[in-house]
Image (cartoon, rainbow, N blue to C red; front, side, top):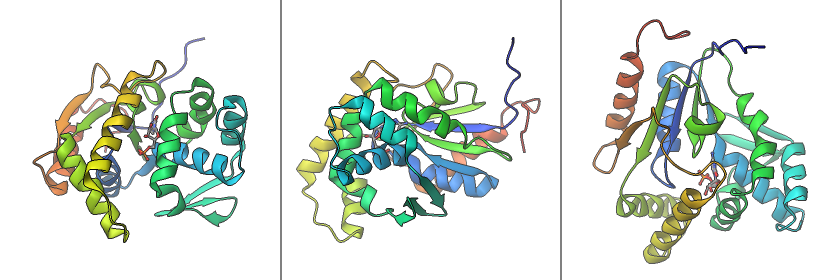
Length: 230
Ligand code: C5P
């Protein structure tokens, strides 16, 4: 049977670590009045649960089962796991690092797939991650591949960490970003890469406002016959 097209529009924003995807996705969603999916948060939540339960991170079937069953709620900017506010906890560097080491495993990615697709509800969804345009929402009418050079991304990540009261070692942050990108790009399952129909957008020298305007302009320039378009 042929599946009918999904009528809920999606803007997929993929790109490397600290390229600003999260901020841009939030701002674009706000401008359009749409929902937002921070898919990286789901990988971080799975990693956090593994650490919290003292589970074996090498037992991928167990990790996938935990991820499939986790009780997660997103409310505004807050994230809850089984009713506990874990917003700050999942942003810790060691949690992001474990998320990046678990993310190459197909069983975990499969366990999170339906959960991600369930975010696709009217009036529309802005989804940010690594494989939004290639795997999770391959039919998204607009796909952005957001990059920024590694020095700009290092500066942004250090700024974020300082705002959280931390004292980042710039060199360590730089090496960590490079390692995560390498892992995301080299994995065999859902590697980080632009979808063939993605628009490449380099935000190294753009402000947040300029980047958001660019994405919105691309959305508005799409042919009007695209279903669900505002
Ligand atoms: O984007 P964020 O840094 O929060 O994501 C945490 C980790 O989850 C990333 O380092 C990446 O390896 C993984 N991830 C992924 N696919 C996604 C989103 C995140 O593999 N769609």
